[in-house]
Length: 523
Picture 1 (cartoon, one colour):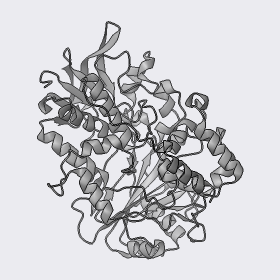
Picture 2 (spheres, one colour):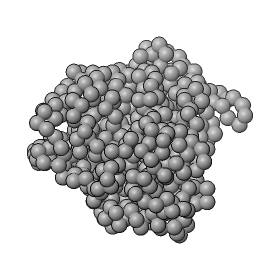
Picture 3 (cartoon, helix red, strand yellow):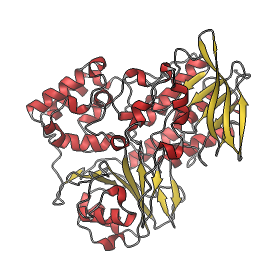
Picture 4 (cartoon, helix red, strand yellow):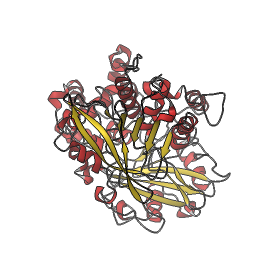
């Protein structure tokens, strides 16, 4: 037992929550020795879910899950009890739910005439195939800080494949070629079934209710302290035998400032950067405010730490260009079934069995998805909730003569109904809450390998980084798995845990998976 070690975690996102669980489960630490500091009122970070049936539910987004990958995530949640069924763990609960609600999208893309697009063909020319192969086989050192557009011609971005891949994973043409290549390899199994999203798995409710709440409940039962409304503003550091050591944590809490002393042997875990930093919500009558990092301070601590310390990364590579890293989502709460009824008839999918429906000719590059209902724990009978997003919110709409970023919730519903050719009366009971996220794909920005710190930097003695902005070979950012894997790696290294971190499944090495992908590319 590591009874004398204390651990302090800055940020209560899935990375920190997972790190706390791994310290208890595998590091044999006492939960009472673990404290998590969180600036927001609730834990969960980017895996959020809020609001209510009366004023409208809110979701900034939902990360894609699979059971063919996500080795560390399921390794963790196989030991976290379900809040729905005490006889199951969260992994068993999720598997059982997906066996009852088998995903198979029948309306993945819709054109400007409201016709379902034939997505059995990827739409590649031979030149597209050769360029894609060249990029996928290129060494990361050769790819460097290049963009996807440096490797693929303009025609590629008109293909059916790009329309589906880009909206499934939220890639933009100007994003990192390295990240795009990693996705091609990590999700090669999905290449052959991208048109149906058959490999995507969903949780019973939104990911806050289905992942964060049971994990936070388990941690609380173990004695872990989660201190919300507490902002960490700085670290006291010293150098000892060439290693940087955190000796104190400066906090803003309860209307004052405190210093938490970090004793010899204690550990500090820091969630550096946030893809949902400076998010802002609108309403049915107003657009979200255009906030930046200056309005939130979410990047400030990492910037302080990294100044003059290259092994702690380079946040400027990720947070310096909002136009290249932002998009907007919207959550719609309905008091009747009219919209769901029409969508299920149009798509051929019962809610929860389809996936993203993308309007490929939309100026906003708009998508919508209907989850299984209820989507929130405690959601009242008769209330329905759906979510959508747009990758180009800075462009003028097709049915509303302004950019999405300037639109109210009511105007977003007008644009959505226009693409579906639905009467606005379908939305008579709707409350639509838009959300602007200026850094939501900041982790996809072109970057050098050194721009992201290792989970435990070589020059660190007691400080680990657990977030989407650390460097993990071969894995892909913008996933729950990346944060959980970073946490597991950091905990095992600092606590010298004698257990292997679950290896990444090398599906891209399978001859069958490769063959399926090649066959798909020629359809």
